[in-house]
Length: 220
Image (cartoon, rainbow, N blue to C red):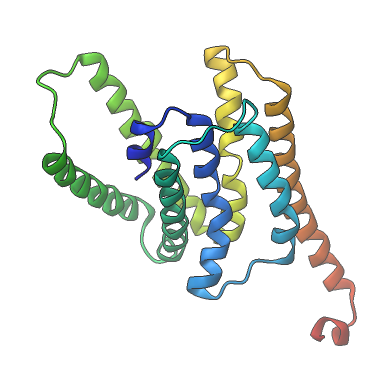
């Protein structure tokens, strides 16, 4: 659904914003599936993250596009994937779990492509090079590292950290492609970083406060 959305959109900025919402949906989906209620600091940091994503991706204005439905479906499905991945990462080796997931995606995608798409008669070597880089680095290696990371933390913590993804994307586009970094994007990055600080720093403060309270207060 994500690749389909990219192939039919003219507004990647809005698509990036909607896709990034998956990491905000993830704790809510975890609450629905596994009764893992998000901690209080998640709700406090959530508005800053949403506002930051808005500044980062929508600084040039909002434009309606039918592809946004595909992006929204993709974000919801990714939130479900993130929670299931966190659950099974605890018992399945990271490399094996990533291989199983990518094999299923490749199989389903190939069947769908053969049924619904017409393949080009010729594909250039440059295209194959970029496909290989995308497959090996941006997809396979990323999923393995993400799965390894999810072994070591909760889905809520991982989701908040993953909100930094558009910040990295914007920063690297400036470094590698010389893209502009207008004030809206700077504000967006700052708000996302602030939401992460509020989530992690606030959780630590609450934990320390609970440790200093008498046993009777902690019980309450």
